[in-house]
Image 1 (tube, helix red, strand yellow):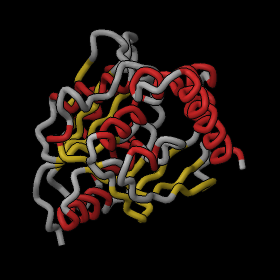
Image 2 (cartoon, rainbow, N blue to C red):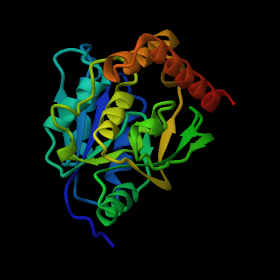
Image 3 (cartoon, rainbow, N blue to C red):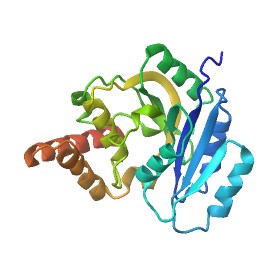
Image 4 (cartoon, rainbow, N blue to C red):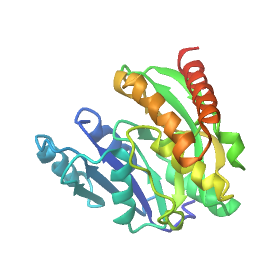
Length: 253
């Protein structure tokens, strides 16, 4: 059954997730696809949790820990993880999310069959009590226009070939929406992002993940369109409003 044999690198940025990270790591270790490495980037100037994180290496010899000298943010930490990875495939996972045990096997085999370079999947949303509170279905994105109004790609569901991540395709240095920028850049170069309608990831909704600095998110959304898409002011404001409305609809209705 394990048709896919190329190594996969699972990139996990870590910042104050001591209560969740072990569960996340175990969900990767339990994969039916065994040729992987886990690269965990400790992104915190406060080293009080570093001993605990380093001890996670005892769970599996495929775990590698990288310690940032200062807090760089999730996007820059992912870039560091990609740079230090040895896999043909890059898989992203946040430090409080978990993946289905067949995720890597199914997703990589799908990509090989469809000959696509990047894919994402359907994912479920769970609250802090592990109750399922939502489901986000994956769909195909063949062009830039399809993704502009709403970031409908769950970061922790994405698997991509490492060759995609050139100097042009890196996570930008901003606090939020950094993944949205990268997906738009990829689509702008006519690289299709293919959706797999299988629920292979659980995304955990917390106060921090849902509501952390709404103002910051709006500022970063505007920057997506004005700085990276190079839209004029009015067009950037328009898409920022549409993006914010779509986010509100998805999370509160």
